[in-house]
Each structure stands twice: as structure tokens, then as C-alpha cells.
Image (cartoon, rainbow, N blue to C red; front, side, top):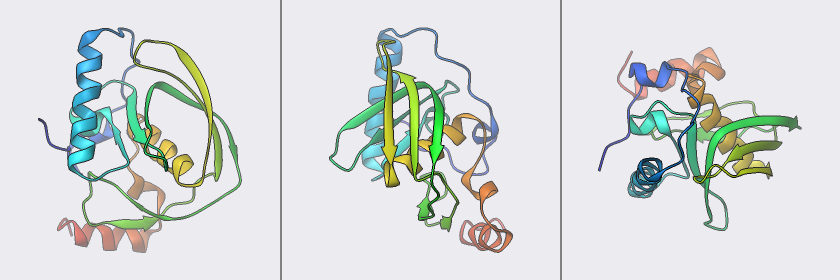
Length: 158
């Protein structure tokens, strides 16, 4: 089983490519990602955090249901929230990031079937965080200079 890619690895800065093949290889990778996320006690994991460069992430909701989002696109954003946001690629770091409180996202599942879901609060933050990963945007880029400076110290990078 692979480990989580840690910041500042270049893979976390890459814009991931769309998923075009929804076969057994993808299913195996998604299953592996779930095992990594579970082992690390996470609630979300983007493909590039697991060493892959495709547009996909997994997430568990408050009820424990596993969601797989391939080729996600956030189509609506409402409200504003900030929570102490963490990331498996930056262990021990928690920062405030402004996020929409409610979002609508369209995506495909592991079989290529399209779906749309409305997410609120923690799930909305998670979808936005993981989608940012797929666009090569790390959450520390979206926080204040002081929080970023503190986070880099926690990570031993400053």
C-alpha cells in the first residue's frame, strides 16, 4: 500500500488529467486510496495525494458513506464558512480557509455514471479541498500569511 504524498512534493502542484477509462485498473486504485485514507484516519483523499495524476478523489460523509468523485466540477457555491482545515499531506497542520458553506458538485462514479450532489458544511469543505488538490492548489495557498508561516514551521520547512 502506498503512502500519502507529503507537501511540498511537486505532484501536489500538478493539475490532474481527466479520467477517461473507468475499468478494473481504476477500481483497484480507488480501493487502494480508500485503504490509505482509512489507515491515515482521513475523511478525504485526492488521487495526487496517493501518487496518481487523474481527476478523482474519495471522501466519507458524516454517516460514514464512501463517495468517489471522478472528474468533479463544482457548479454552485453558497454562503461562507471557515473551519480548522487539515490535510493528510501536511500532518499536524490546521488552518482557517474561507470556503463556501453549501456547494453543488457534478462528477462521475467508478463506472462512469454521472451524478450531482449538494454538500453542506464539513462535506462541502472536503469537496472544495480535494477539488483544489486536483487543480494543483494546496490549502496553505488559501490561508493568511501568518497561518502559512506557522504551518511551514510545524512541517519543519521554515
